[in-house]
Image (cartoon, rainbow, N blue to C red; front, side, top):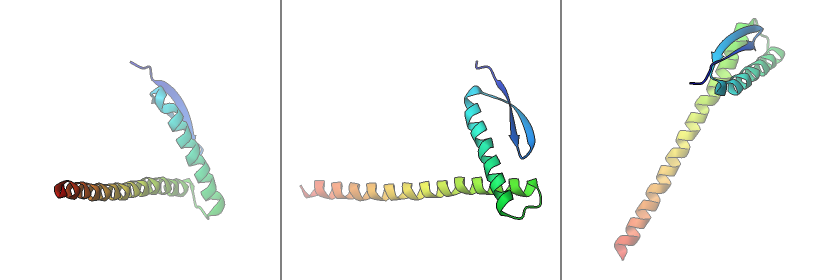
Length: 98
């Protein structure tokens, strides 16, 4: 059994202590850094009332990227299925003509 790791992440001027699997550390630290960078960008470019507004906009930004990626993947999968059906039809017609 892998030993758990205790880390502290700082997000929006708050420290969050976490107990994680060591394999998660790099991803969590990168995620926290990305949140901090995006929050700073929102604070600099928009009239923001408080940290909660900034964090809500960060959450929306990251969630929309995930959703858009899922939509694009689904569209790609549909295109692949259509191409495979076309190839299958072509093969079937070629075999039946012989």
